[in-house]
Image (cartoon, rainbow, N blue to C red; front, top):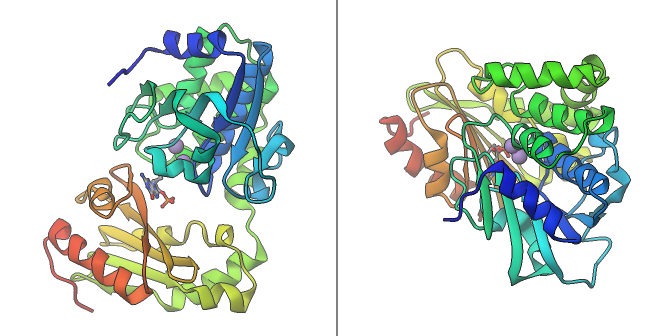
Length: 329
Ligand code: 5GP
Ligand code: MN
Ligand code: MN
């Protein structure tokens, strides 16, 4: 379905004049780095743009260039309808959230992504599941567009690579990732500073959520599954925001012998964000897709409406089959 090469993605940027640039809801380092990387490329090409998120972008990414240009659609409504859209790191239309309201179905949409579950929702699709991050694809698009690299663009792309590989540790850390990262360091990126902001630094509210979450940690499915739960009441009682609950699922997956880690995070009452991480026997992208989400074989997620206990029951039903063992405690 209209899968194109990097040259055509570059041409898309050249042949339009004004763009809506967006990534996915609850943006991570790859989403934010890639969106701002596109913005820097458009600036070099002399194009106009508006870069929009459905909600707030995590403040931890404020070291990225043009961070202050990011619109929060909830706080800053826009009354413009765009004819050209660039979506990065979005596996399907729903990942764009309410930003979809800013363009009609007839708009030209360039979809740049690396999720194997991507459904090619764009009019032009550059999907490379072999890429570790959307930022890795952008590196090639920048070259094809004749954009020159500088420290700012390098920082955006490096941030996407660093965060989506878990600090160059996950199995998607290919030779190419390391080669690109090395080139980006050559443009002046300070790896220690980026890692400090993206991977090391945590908020005190995160620690307070973590303290509660660890008390809910349970093993099930003959100890092949570990899960953690954070309720809306937990957030309210410790004064934490949704973004303070990142990374909890790793405590589950990292336990020796566990094949699948799951976190249930009720960021607003009745809406549960489910994150899954696999070791090697189970493909969590397949499970997430069955539950209306998506992702990668080893990291996937979905959002399910309902009470925590109902959502857990739904997830266990699908997981029982995938793990080959029924839920137990
Ligand atoms: P996380 O659990 O960190 O939010 O997401 C892990 C991976 O799954 C990421 O690659 C993310 O893009 C994907 N993912 C998480 N939630 C959803 C979702 O609701 N829909 C889709 N399609 N992918 C998701
Ligand atoms: Mn992402
Ligand atoms: Mn990504």
